[in-house]
Length: 148
Image 1 (cartoon, rainbow, N blue to C red):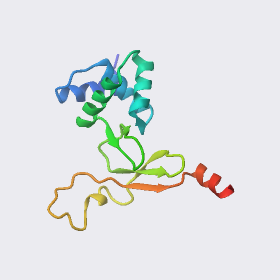
Image 2: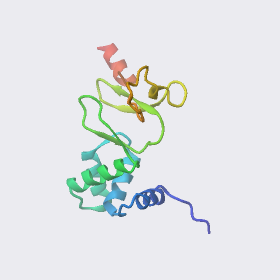
Image 3: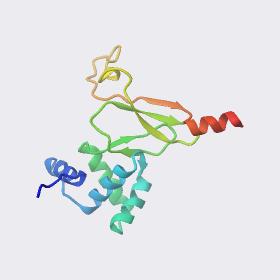
């Protein structure tokens, strides 16, 4: 019988590679984020409790911190919003954010692999990440806004 690697297997390997313990809390947090991209820490705590029972908010914050640190999660914080977490890491993507309902969706970079990493004048910085957020109204909010 062939073993099919799961997301959990990948998460376990990554945590081990970075010298971190494998805990039910960390795995529950990863599962919560993988099931709902752009999730808040409070939503992660709620989903994790549903998965493993009791988990403190501090344990959720600690797990999120470690998982962002090792590169398994990405933390974004659109202006006026709590921090959001996603498991789409390792690529150059950006976000569309609705001004009305606050929904956040991924959008691939417009041209090439990393055009946003090429600043006109980097002023000596070694740039390794760029954050681009596109603000507007999602289709549902746009339609509702027009009909008002």
